Amino acid sequence: MRILGILGSPHKSGNTNLLMEATLAGAAAAGADTEQVNLGELEMKFCVACAKCYADGTCIHEDDVAALTAKMSTAEGLVLGSPNYMHTVTAQMKTLMDRCSVHVHCFLLEGKYGAAVATAGGSGEEQVAEYENEFLQLCGARTVGIAAAKAAGPKALLDQEAALARADALGRNLVAAIREKREYPDQAAAHAAFFPRMKELVTRRGDRCPFQFGHWQSKGWL
Ligand SMILES: Cc1cc2nc3c(=O)[nH]c(=O)nc-3n(C[C@H](O)[C@H](O)[C@H](O)COP(=O)(O)O)c2cc1C
Image (cartoon, rainbow, N blue to C red; front, side, top):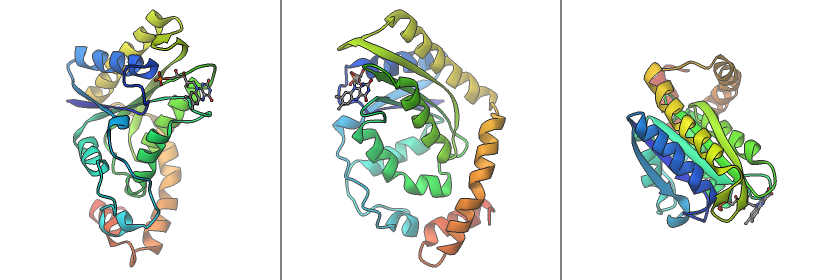
């Protein structure tokens, strides 16, 4: 079982990384193969809303995102991590999310499980982690929970021992959920409510966006 951690902090040894590493350590202790990617080390251009990904499944940009999304597609579990920047995720994490628009239209993370970690200097760490999970759910994944903590300073979390224990438990829980193929009725209901909107969009744009139309056809969703 592969678990991929995606860190959106520019600090690869910072506060959010403490939670990410502890989450991946928990997953590894539960038997998963883990890998971490730091978005700050990648070349990632902004989405320019050209809709090429809807049309043929590829991006106009030639940067590191295609390799990352390929990696995401081979993992059973994904952990997103970001500090709170202005009440939301970092620009690095948001850039990845925007570049995954076709993942939302086609639910390309269907069958995968996710989890999220976040930190903040003052407040909002839980909201940021929940937002990361919301993105994963929009892409069709099921999310198992969050680990969030306030920063006590650089590379130091408030109540660090407890925060790292929560992150470790999150990683173990992610592995258990994948093994059990755990169901989340509230997430299934939200997905069922979102599905008709995407179906309408994919159908209406069928001529101009054959990739996403073909994906929906191949899934038997149309
Ligand atoms: C540009 C920027 C924006 C931030 N915005 C917020 C904020 O809105 N609320 C907050 O509580 N902390 C904010 N912070 C503080 C970070 O969330 C906090 O220091 C975090 O733990 C840093 O994580 P890192 O070490 O992984 O980078 C901000 C920090 C920066 C650099």
